[in-house]
Length: 128
Ligand code: ASC
Image 1 (cartoon, protein in one colour):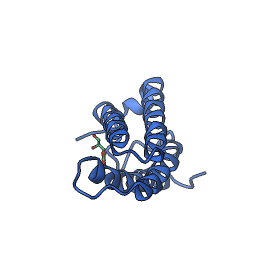
Image 2 (image 1 turned 45 degrees about the vertical axis):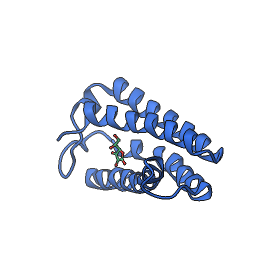
Image 3 (image 1 turned 90 degrees about the vertical axis):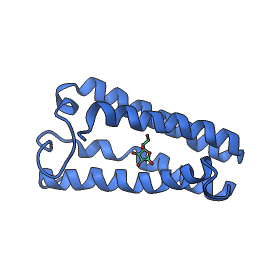
């Protein structure tokens, strides 16, 4: 899928960057910094769920070097990393379901749970 390890690094970062942009728009609504618009929330949450599935293919063997904050534990503790990725994807699927209800309180709750799974993976597998 990738010609060079750098391409895999670029790919996973791009996927996470796009996901973060759309997650951030939900966060603004969830923290009352932006007006709640159910349609906009649903659009953004759908993108977040789709994007959540993509970064993992970029964590190929040999791509722990270069322009990356990925910790070696991603490769030495692959089962734990996989679990963290699955927790994130599951929470984000819930977030998308919550956004579809059109209810701000549901969005707030699901956003908070999703943010926890982002942070858990970063704390364990991302360098400062
Ligand atoms: C974001 C973003 C993250 C997560 C994380 C949640 O918006 O870019 O990496 O939320 O900060 O704790």
